[in-house]
Image (cartoon, rainbow, N blue to C red; front, side, top):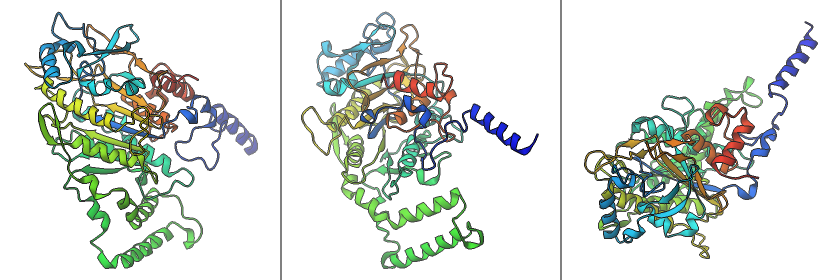
Length: 500
């Protein structure tokens, strides 16, 4: 075959596979929506400008929070009725209401069952403006242990996958690579509680996977003992700061020359070179990050819930998260709070293998209460609070708790049927409702969302294309989709509930 004919044939074949048919424009950045998939994108007016994710580490029960069916388990003591009398007593003694107010109908699931918001969702139930923009998504996966469930829930990829990256990495990279997006202050943060707890691979929230190093979100431990502000002051170099910066720039330039042919022209592409360049840029501009992280954000707050007084880690984390998202200059686009409650269970956070009612009534309630306090009520319009027209709030956890008892006071891990919750952003009263359903006979989710689809949905809600070698593929989307357009449309219509 002649060379010209071979190239023509090759080009035609490539177009058939979609490689050349819809070429991206040269200046398109990572995460930009391809022109041939634009029918699946949210309109600009519906996109979330930023996202606050509250990751309730340890595993929160759906059956006494966001997927409560009061009549289930009355005969065999399961679901809400596993500890019904204890729950009623605790609900009343904590001052949340009387037994008749234990639950509140929210809506019908896809099986026609009326699902209630449970006792420990009471802070959000007291804010109809919030629940009117709430979408409950049934979830399911097969990882029973925290060590496997946390990486999967936080990244959408299984432990050991080279693509395993926290959502903050995708969001940091997307905004950093937008035209004019270069800045020293991060676009994405992960806030860990300043308490000792088993990590259980929760650090996956900060993982960068196959993304470049400059996509790493800024991870912070929020505690009175945090040294971040001292480190950003760069006291180690003291009065020699200018000389130190000059020396580092000299070494950077020398390193850059190694990537130029004969020391001339543009440097060849190299991830290590780009990472070095950005890290030096961020170091030189540490003052910009320091201006965002005022020392006052790391001062202790005392809190109480249901008669228990403690250092209020949820309040401290959400105070900083809200400030980062509502800044008038250089606001964050994504903040993930790794929440363990005001009084973490000794097992870890919300991991209630024992004392379920006592710990859930304090920890779940208090975190949701602190969250609600930072969302503008109708007519409030406080610039230092979150606006649900701009901010999408996501409540996640690595798995739920069993419908039946563990021992005499606890509940075990239950990845087979749990929920995540989307509030605000593209979710309006029109999208309010429940996706999927959980069965009464076994407590297993049907027509569920996977952790990967959860991550994809958040990206799509912000207008970030979720399919790439670094993130997800069509095969990660359920529903028998045939291509990326069908997959992206399913994410928008089924999970976010937005039809155009």
